[in-house]
Image 1 (cartoon, rainbow over the protein chains, first blue to last red):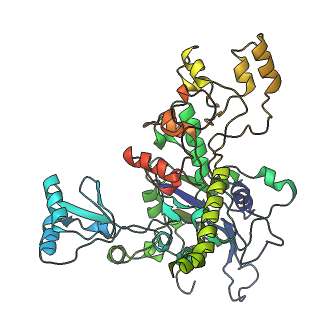
Image 2: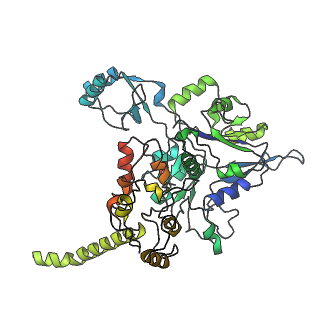
Length: 330
Length: 170
């Protein structure tokens, strides 16, 4: 699959009505608790945050501005540290023969993107000779991982083929490492068993499993809708799964079309990544490396792991962009 | 000495064994292993005598791709007119609302399994690869096991289909 789902949210169009949050909660079987309006322990996938330029309450009347930011899981992918330098097999052989312990932190691939070995497999003499027989000249490793996936001890969270970070609630043991690792606080912990009043249970969505108490839940870009659309397409006789198009619940619910969803790799889609990266209005949450000098950016991206999220926020107001990017003194 | 050790560990052994049995029973109940229907249906005669080789003749798909599952009595009535004595008794006794008329191999809530994605995709499975050779069976009893995750993953591995969590879980 060559899809990479992404989202763009135009904050100039957003009116803060909260329809996306309601749609998300209904689509994903979120439980309802008593006075759930403004608690830190509430369980929501999509949080509608109120942002103002008047932090110290010193602005005069007329200067205060307010914006609403829908914040869901940003589906980070991490920047791929290994892809920058392919490693020739000869150097690997030299190091192995020299008695060094050689391993790579990510999955190793050959030049044709065929997977060779799993992460952190220690290379032996036989393995290198085997690769030479196959005609492999250089290897590179891919360790692009969102911050939450690398810390999960039970593989409850994983990156799918379309770049969406999945979460299996039933597999989660509730250690909350991922919640700590998440730079966006997009994950929520179920402190109580879900309760549904009256006949509410009959109207639950059968495609999404209910999460019990003690599990971390998060937005998965409504991947069950993708599966539903895939089934519809297969019933028509279409077999190419790259043609499946879908919209998450928040996108369909938005009355002003402020949220757009699509493929980041596709030049014809409204959320083409290269177009958005060059857009002055577009920012990514707490990702100030985007706005840094290109030379500085290249240097740091090759060294350090950045979350590299797939959700873009568009705004024409500079104060809002500065707050979202995470500049100091904004 | 040995006998006292045995007596000491006997309660533990018994309780472990009992909890093991309880666990297996609970798994079987959750996954609907005893899914035999109160219906004397014979797959073999339908396959050989009436020459129905396509399973989709009765077990088809809806327009949106959902699997129809066990056919309703209305599907039987498409061929059986209900004129003979045996058919009269059959249509009198069996209704779609009869209680153990559940799904045949129930998957847990966290699995999003769709038959059409497995059967009508680029790489397809056979009905028999999960359900056993139902075509020659004389009853409605389950032939093959209860579809654990390893079974799915083995097939995905051998056909080089992605084994990411998101493919099946939701």
